[in-house]
Image 1 (cartoon, rainbow, N blue to C red):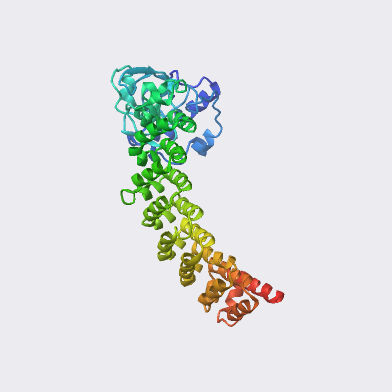
Image 2: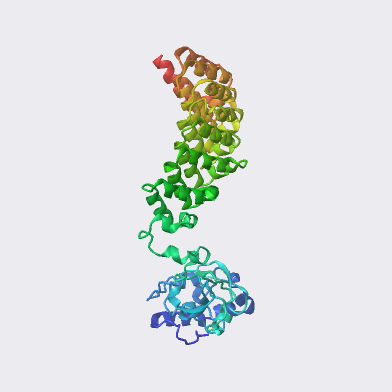
Length: 478
């Protein structure tokens, strides 16, 4: 059977003749039974044509010219004959509703290509031209394309059958800006915006306006801004734009105002911790820590953070706050924070972010808090050495080259060097022990490896052979 003549048929004679020959072949008629029409996915994978050819081999010789940037084919695109005329979705104009609810007529170029539905009348579910299933309601839409009602498969946010309108500002429907924020801001002073500082702080243009003016404002104007924002510091810290205003505010405000901000952040349990875990909040808190000046302020922060120290060390945003505490506060100020980390040493050391925090704590802390933390790491050294992340913490203790720490660590691992050598992560720890310990200690490790019942296995082990090579290297040098 020949393809029905319509305006979507290719104008290329070679293409038309080839397609007529294919669809006229008797062997192809089984493609038009009712079951096949209902589900195009149930077509045979390799249908046989005349002369023993396959459908794949025939289609490989076809050449389609005049490609269309939307559908991959021009308006002469060829579809399976489902006994009805096919038409391209982009040949129509559909009525869509803007977020204000008024209809507008959008042209075919309004839509982002690649996600339109080629529905049929036989099934509720059909295939997109990109191969994905979608809910098809195009038949009703085609018949009622100039209707003033919103299509069933559409909504008021600019989506139509999974298609996003390029002219429709989807963000504007949910984040509409007041008219007064759309006017130029630079021509007005801060006093002109009195009563609207919160809205300014949460606006992408307004936040820059506030930051710029807070650096050169008077004390009276700064107090005016502070009084309007102080009750909203928690929400502003996690706001995509408001957090920048808070960062600038904690820099320029007085110590008394900074303390007031801290009291607002810490009045509820875990409120400050939750802010630290946020991708915007963590930056605002870090800037706050950099500008704390009084013991009372530091005490408020460390007390609030200690309750959530474990969660912070394991979080990709929160661990930066812990490292800031170590950088800007004294060991005495960080005492409770470090004790909390020592109490949960193993769980933190075996975490991707936590292992980095522990190394940082050991590196930059001093005195009794650090000694307790190191002692906890050594006590768990055997289990940490063969862990994916924990082995880096053990290696870091060795790299510090503190004699007493090294000796205590080697004693903890003694008797387990052979088994650790056959472990992907433990073998790195044993090699580090051989290379960074003293001559007497390294020889004890070598003798333990050679006297092990599994010594011969180490030579051919994927990881153990590297340990043996390091042992030989150390023995030759010493």
